Image (tube, protein in one colour):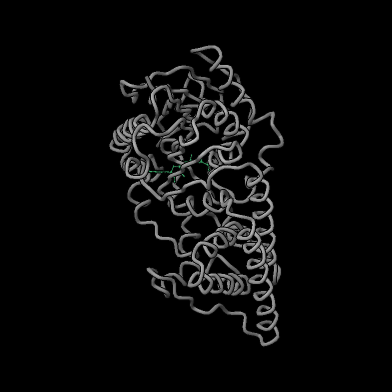
Length: 412
Ligand SMILES: C[S@@+](CC[C@H](N)C(=O)[O-])C[C@H]1O[C@@H](n2cnc3c(N)ncnc32)[C@H](O)[C@@H]1O
């Protein structure tokens, strides 16, 4: 969610619209929340601002009964789940992106203290052993990475795809850490997966990929041992955040890798007290591409995401007309699925932004209005104007402002 302040417009029930305005403003005024709990653990494209999530979760979760959950069906890196857990609420998150669910699970892993201490001790033991192996490799002059075999990936093809992105000594260190995690997975797959999220969190920082959303090559000078030390620090950051998150009593959040079209297979109808979610912005991101390097390195299977990602940029590049038709259908389908999960009177806060897809302005509030099923009404909305980025956006939007919206839907 962009952090720039812009004019805010609002409509609907005054008390609700006031909360939505506060949630939008919090992204600029709240300088603390984003640094608390496990929020700083891992980057993620179009992450919801934690301060916005906090206000929306408090609002939709206000009347939640003990067994009723807060749901985010596009949970991404788990911002909403962290805030729900911090509020003592039951939380369920689903997302089609295997990297998202890996990270969201790690950020909400509020297991008993003994297990969290084990996360710290095993993480540090692995980092220590990898550092020692790195020194030995340096002394013997063997800085090349062994060809690690990752289930479901051709080792030579994987090797070729990764070769350009890491300096040889960095790649050797990372493969060593990953091999130790593979070994741990044979005894404790859950712990290994949380530590894999720690490795994922530092991967792009020691690669030559500029960022998640910018795939261009950049020259990064990474010292020997730095990748391993960063991994150890990331373990520490995660454990400290989880310790804070676990101070409030609540069940361990559930996280599922799932297409929203199959939501009813894990969330029974009429069981959710409130939804806070941010669907993809039409034609803006390519989650499958943004995480390609991580998928290759960590061995995450992504065929379902490649095929089922909603509103991806690549779908608009390929056939804008067909992509637009599919986007509208998918958004309507998603809102219908969300509505079905809600208890009567339950609320869904949808955070969504206007975008430009293949040169055409996409007005998200209009799209949500068109997509509403009969059992949902708009109780209020608030929209904050965002700056136009370049001439393509200015041409596409013309006189209408570009904005980010929060729409509060209420089930009858
Ligand atoms: C705007 S992001 C959500 C970010 C999240 N709120 C956070 O704070 O990290 C939208 C998410 O929708 C997911 N997504 C795209 N298509 C999907 C589908 N068909 N089913 C479920 N999730 C999907 C993407 O993987 C992405 O994580």
